[in-house]
Image (cartoon, rainbow, N blue to C red):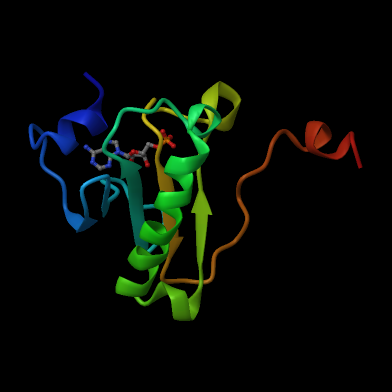
Length: 119
Ligand code: AMP
């Protein structure tokens, strides 16, 4: 069973921020910003590419609620979902990274020549 399913089932600990019947938000174990939250559906969905539109529709207000709770709605934040191998997805359970608490730079680059070849 995947790590995030184990967290949902309470078999692994997590530092929870917000939860409802369908979604869970908790602190990333290895934060990449002063605030780094992971937001997941409790249902096992592999990634964004296989996410049903209606689930995403319900997840959007949950994500916005997490931002409000942490007052990131005022200061801003970055929302990222890594999708598949080239996207750098390591845990194959849909999750959004919410990063904030500081002015973020933009470190997410492909190899420079690759990134620029379509400009
Ligand atoms: P990704 O590379 O997009 O699949 O991101 C996976 C994220 O999950 C990484 O930022 C990890 O630090 C985080 N992570 C892995 N295991 C745990 C855990 N047990 N609790 C909280 N975050 C975790």
